[in-house]
Image 1 (cartoon, one colour):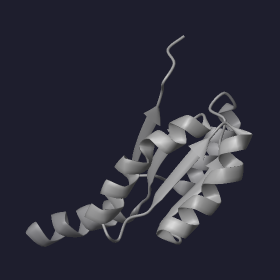
Image 2 (cartoon, rainbow, N blue to C red):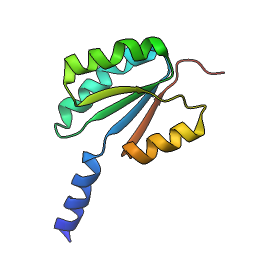
Image 3 (spheres, one colour):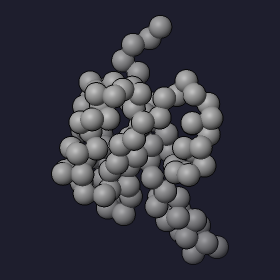
Length: 104
């Protein structure tokens, strides 16, 4: 029984953690949290999505330099449900964290 629980937990941890930060500023604001997570969970990866072209032009290069292939960035506007559905199907994250610096 103990072995089965451990096996399930390890499988879950291998799925990526998903951070969604809409803007370039929000992407920069999560870097300390991403770093803490990746340092604490050596086998885990992070996927950061954004809705901003400026974030998409800066962040993939920065993440690759800092964490090689353990952290990636891609476009995923949350206001397009079919894109989000496809993203969830392909990436299958174990946890989702949204950054929201503006409340409407």
